Image (cartoon, rainbow, N blue to C red; front, side, top):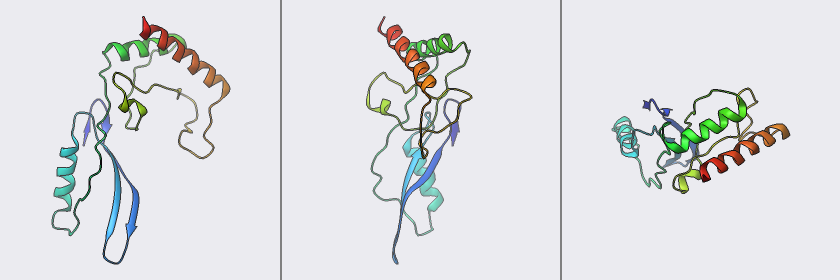
Length: 148
């Protein structure tokens, strides 16, 4: 499953519990923004049909967060980023979870910059001082432009 705005579905087994009579897998599924959790579950259920496995206790559906690149919010954030960095990049959508899903009219932005080592969610995660200063300037300008 995939779409143009957000790419491929991702799925990982976050937890596994195995006893003599039962295997329980906790799945983290991040599905493309133009699809629904119902579609994902239909595919999973069709795939496991007749295998003896079944889906139980689907606990939550954190719907994907997506704003088209031509919305004022995304246009403003992109313009500020490009002005501050001297680049001409287009925004990207990733499948990560974000605090932004809990607030209306908000997206996660930064602080990863092209060409820098990807260390987020890794052992010894860090941010270089110059990167922190640069992203702070971008955030300050974002806030100023969005508040106008």
